[in-house]
Amino acid sequence: MKILHTADWHIGQLFHEYDRTYEHQKFLDWLVQTIHSEQLDVLLISGDVFDLSNPSAVSVKMFYTFLNKAVSINPELQIVITAGNHDSAARLESPKPLLESSNIHIIGLVEKNESGNINYDKLTIPLKDKTGIIKAWCLAVPFLRMGDYPAIADCDNPYTEGVSEFYHQAYAYVSGKKEAGQAILAMGHLHAQQAEITDLDKTERLIMGGVECISAAAFHEDIKYVALGHIHKAQRIGGNEHIRYCGSPIPMSFSERNYKHQIVVFEIENEEVKEIKAIEIPVSIAVKSVPDIHKTMTEVLDALAQLPDSNENIELAPYLEVRVLLDRPEPSLRYRIETAIAGKQVRLATINVKYPVNTADKETPSITPDKLDELQPLDIFLRVYQSTYSNSVPQEMLQLFNQVTQEVSQIREQ
Image 1 (cartoon, one colour):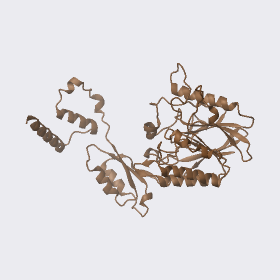
Image 2: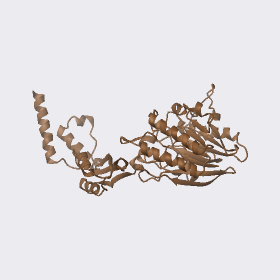
Image 3: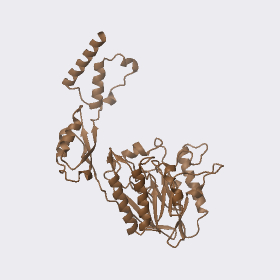
Image 4: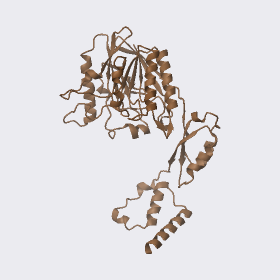
């Protein structure tokens, strides 16, 4: 049995206000062809199908058109989809009645009985070969929200210990169904311990202040493969070949510009995982950071001048992040950059401004509230400017500030 693991599609994402429909469509078309060329039996999608909980009609149509093409080109393909934290679990599950007669399984919600016990049967999917024989069981676990996992009394971390207990109970349930010759797989949309993360992961993917990391020990040693989503960098967890993030299929931020975007394909034979391989996904539109590190305005303009000239396919031009090091305010910053890239084969997405590190801040004592009242506006202005730009206030700006304060004083006297 041959299985493909993918996750974190984020269909419908706007990249600094640029629509990414073209990129997602190119990926999905490539994935359909890969499903065919690899002669796959199972497709696992581990969460964050959509970027928004209320995706647009275009995004929804794109997703279900993909499902139709995938099963048309491979009628016996089994697909298991779980909800991520960006997905609406109920909305993702809404077409389940239409799919009950197919081999497409969508798991968004964790159902419980009247006693409050988790219905693990709803999360347990049998994976069958082309002859209809069960070769593996898949624990299709979506992103677990508060109340989805067991409550552990007197524990240090209710989330991590609750999620770990969830997987332990799920394994215990499926092991009672498992027969000789059948493997157990698991899916998850979570932050695993030791996972390498990017700046975007720090701001968007962490959900509980960094205390939500799940240990690899949460997955029983008899689980032969753990298909994870949530972290966008493809990687193994804890040195385990079989516990993996496949990563995002397209770069979701400039911090992901050097990632090798991929899917993971593996085989199950006699209860064992074999032939794990990563297949790199072609990037349809590149993301560029110019320069590679923050530099002065003069150096930035020189670097932008070296960019290639535009052609008729400007809508497919790379997204551009411009990295500038400033030591003073630059009111015309955007205008100067837009002028520099006029006629270049790039699309400006963002300007990333950085200021010199101010080592003096560590030596300057903090100001107490009573001392703050004693400071004059000029004192505050000088301190703020120095703290922000690690530089003294230019004379012309100082003159303007003094002029403003004098005008304000005159108005107050009137």
